Image: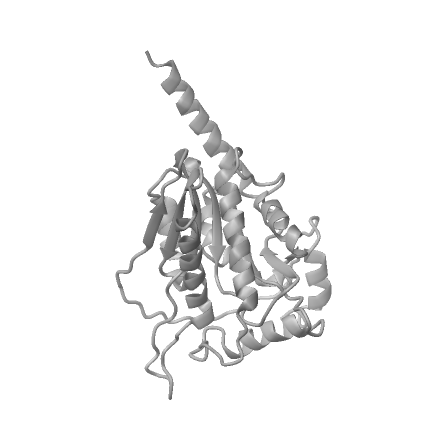
Length: 306
């Protein structure tokens, strides 16, 4: 479509990485027809809470979606979408981080929620339901840390942040990585819009600072292009296919490192005096600022009551 419109994808992608980028009209039209078969099902989010020691009414939320695509009887052979990476792996990481928090000698200052959401593959419905019907006030929800797929190919020197530069959570992550000699890196494929395609987005839309991460791409002891090669292999061969299963060549040592880092990020946020914030110019900042201003006004009214 781009070529037929006289445009070049690579040059437009490079331009789109700049903050001054403006939409480019293709001067093209497309016509298509879609047939939709629908059915109604009931599903559930699952949540566990670890009470904080000092600020029980403030919350850090870890999320991972437990659903995948189910079963497709029209396929020959294996019909089950097991979703080993997407997202049994993130669900396992959620459980391990919850276990780590439960074994602390003393609870964190703030409470921590471990939220396993449903229907991510059906347009983030589980996360959307929680974010619009929260168990605990969103003005008391300090951050969301989302896990959607883990690193199955070994240790890396970096950690990918989807939407790097959006909030101060990125800085907390960078500080957690620094003693380990690791760094944060931006999304290598921003044109795919990953920030708007996983559960954290529903929290961001409501103003809650949200961190979404992916495995790094600089693998220790591997060629420079190894990470992107493995990433492309997964996308082309296993993503949203029945073949997303545990593989015998997986090396989860990097996943262990990443889980420990995400534990530290959540623990740091749970202990800090200040809330994480959206950075200047972020599209979700106004929503958060308005929310917190309203909360401050309510508190002021409460204090003035006799």
